[in-house]
Image (cartoon, rainbow, N blue to C red; front, top):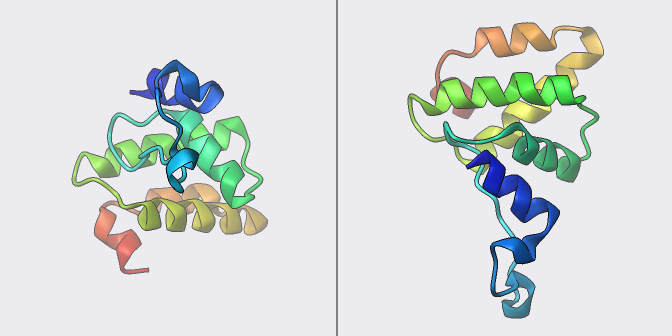
Length: 110
């Protein structure tokens, strides 16, 4: 799944015969599941304008995968997790944020 998402993000025509824009839609790559790859998460980080490193993206991706083993995360859940992680970097508590979350419901309830 991660390889396909990266290919779509790098060159959409690799897997898409129709462009979403031609139908008034935007491309969406689901990243709230256990098969997500860090490149797809990094793409979302870039879309949100967060300054996370590749290492940070890989760390958050691992957390997403672990949480998605319990249940898939919504895009809102993923965005919330990414923003919390990014904000916690200011106080150097970003690792603690990930360690403190054990279930997807903890993100939803925040």
